Each structure stands twice: as C-alpha cells, then as structure tokens.
Length: 432
Image (cartoon, rainbow, N blue to C red; front, side, top):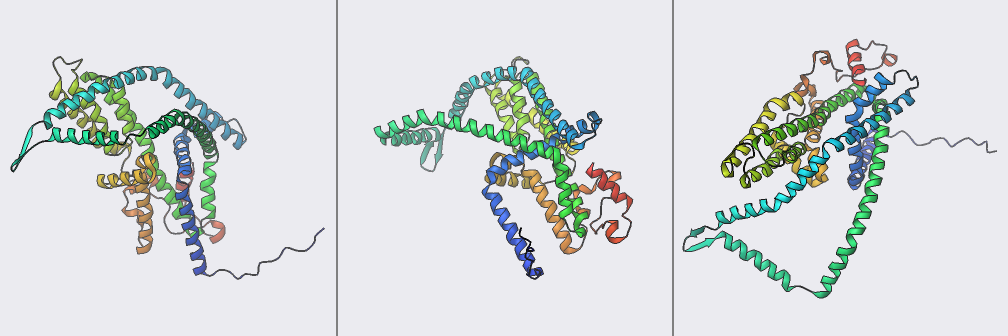
C-alpha cells in the first residue's frame, strides 16, 4: 500500500493582474464556445423558457397538493410529473376542441390563396399598366416587369442540360425521404433532451440560484440577488405578458373578424395571436391577410360591403385593436419593466434574426432589456451611484420598496452585525 503523502502545492498565489487575465481569457473562451454551439443552446433556452413558465404550476402542486409528502426530493419530482400530465391533458383538450375547426378553416384558407393571388395580380396589373412619361420616353411598368421575367425564364431554359435534369430528378426522389427521416430522428432526440432538461430545471432550479449565491464573493451577494430579482421582473413580465397578450388579441381578432364577415376568422385570430410575439412588426403582418381577403370577398354579415371600402374598414379595425392593446393592455400586463423605444426594439429584432433566427426575433426585446440592466449596473458602479434608482423597475409594490441595497450585506457569522429584517424579508420573499 502506497503511504506516500500527496505532493503539496508549491506555486505562489496569483497576483491580481494574473487573476484578471485568466478570468478574461476564460470568459472569452466560454463566449466563443457558446457561439459555436448556438444550435445546441437553442434547445436549452427553449427548455428554460418553458420551465420558467411552468414553475408556478409546479410550486402549486408542491406546496398545495402534495404537502403531506415529507421528503422534499420525492415531493418535488411528483409535482413536476403532475405538471407534465396537466400540460399533456391541456394539449389533448386543445386538439379535440380547437384543431378540427382550425384544420377545416386552414384548408379553406389555403384553397383561397390562389384566388387571392390572382386578385392581387389583377389589381397590380391595373395599377402598373398605365403609361408613365419621363421626358421623351413613355414607360409601362407592367410590360417592363413582364419582359424582365420572360428573359430570366429564357436564360434558365437555355441552360437546360439532360444530365443536370436527371441528377435533379434523382435528388428530388431521394433527398425528401432522407431529410424526413433525419428530421424525425432529430426532432425525437431534441424533444427527449428538452423534457429531461425541463424536468431538472423544474426540480432543482432553486439550487442553481443558491449555488450562484454561494460562489459569489460576500461583498457582491446583495448585488447578485438584486440583479436576479430585476431579471425575474423583466422576463416574467415579457414571457407571461406575451402569452396573455397573444391569447387576448387572438380571441379579440377572431370575434371581430367574424363580426365583420371575413372568411376563416379562426385562422385570422390564430395568426394574430401567434404574431403578437413579434414586437411591432407582428401585428402589422397579421393584418395583411385580413385586408387582402376583404379586397376579394364580400362581407357575410354586412350586406353590400366589399372591395376597397371593406378593406379600409378591416384595416381601421386592426389599427384600433393594436392601439387599444398599446394604450391599455401592454402597460397593465408588462408595466414598465421593458420600457424600450420602438426603434430600439426594431433594431433588436433585426439583430436577433441575424444571430439566432426565429428564437432571436422572439427574445429580442427582453434580451435588450437584460443587456440594459447589466450595462446600467456597470455604469452605476463606475460612477458610484445606485444604478437601480434611475431604472423603470423602481416602481415596485410597497412591500418591495426596501429591496437589498447594493452595499455589502454580510452574514452575521462573518461580521457580528444584525442583518436588517426588511432586507431579509425581501430576500426570503424572492426565494419563495
């Protein structure tokens, strides 16, 4: 048996400069690897968002239904399992009650698309077929566009090759089957990993925050708790607010379009509700199908209403819904936790689309608000002022007015001082 003692460490302690250099290199490496594994992180982000939304349901089962079970780990695991069962039942109920009429109206919507395209083309042709005189030349825009497309088609047909056609036909026959099989396997694995990640986040999510608090230097523990609290306010307002807004706007649009006599109101309401998650741009895009339908159809509820007057009424109705949402719903649902200028949101949406696709578009607004939170904190520390005093989130309820200060709150065992009771109440309230 080897009784030799383990070698002792002989290196001297790192200097402050060495520690900072190593920390910066480590942060840069982690950031680089996160960018390289962005697709894998997408699954983690989606799982974290869903787990965050389901967290109150798990807490309800944990504290209100399964309180008789003494072992915390078993009780929490059962609460997560019951939450999953509840979600499956809700989706099954949705599939039974909503999907059949939705499928029917979607099929009718798809069947109306060719007629809609022909009508738009006819209207466009009538508008562009008028001659425009510029100096000594007369131009007909429709003829110019038609000739340009015909020339492009001739170029494509002139480069036709038999071998290329055979290769394309073979690819067309084989690729779909391979792609469908690969997508199915990938989807199954992604869903499996997502469920596993969600389970552990819902079961042990509080431990991650506790571990973060443990590894934070004592002088900054109060700062970290306040930052986590503010992050919770931002993401809670956005995620749950967007779900509520999408639900309300979807139902409202369905009722209003049905009252106006538009075809497929359920589909139009679903489109409006889903596109609500795209800031500023989504509601505008959602109104386009309804306006186009009004141009080519007659109202089923208001006799004689069709064409351009019908389209103007539909456009005005959508505008009223959007303005009502902006003036009354958004301030009450999201409060001032985001408080971003529309131009900033548009830039964030474009940047998010370039970096992370659809997920980047959906999370653009809260991500910018999160970056603003950290930037404000850093700026406040640089200039020695309370960064949260100038933020929109200071309008908190009365019982949260005495949030932990940014000065260090050391434990009693380290300082012998008494931690203020109000700060302790705030921290306990947040952890609950």
